[in-house]
Image (cartoon, rainbow, N blue to C red; front, side, top):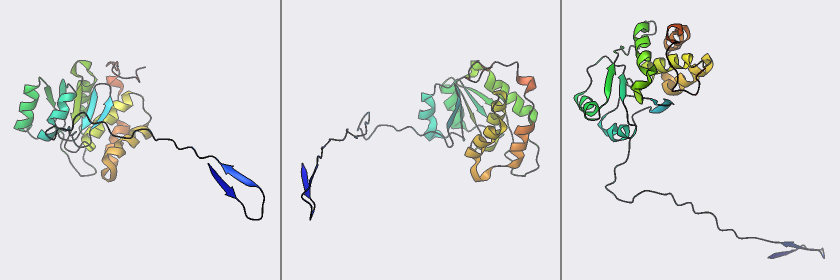
Length: 201
């Protein structure tokens, strides 16, 4: 208890001070073992929806993390041959690889292959392929277009589709990608089930 006597005043103020122990803020770590392996997600990794993930190109450092996802499928949007280490990873983990080669072109007026995006979306929409990882080189443009078109199927408004695209593309966002997503016709895919998503109508 602290008493504070004010000069020139007979009044005495009493202030009660309670000392409260703060809750423990110690971070829980499963093990202090220096040899313990830490998980490293691929560049730009994120959850898209139930059983659907996105990222940049996984390398060997990411394999232990990917194993925790229990993937059934990987959808690669790069045209280059899949690296041998990645081929061995998918084989040894019973993962099916779907490859839809789309050139990572930086030119602003080059057409994005609509048929390829449509075929890739059919793979993503098939729940038998879940859990599935969609990836390209950086997980920005090609992956962003596939996810953006999926969002249109999920009835997202365009401003939200573009916001998500820009979160991953950042300063590298392309008007041509956004125009493609805006113009993409989802009507031929509406018969595919969206049972994996809470946005099912």
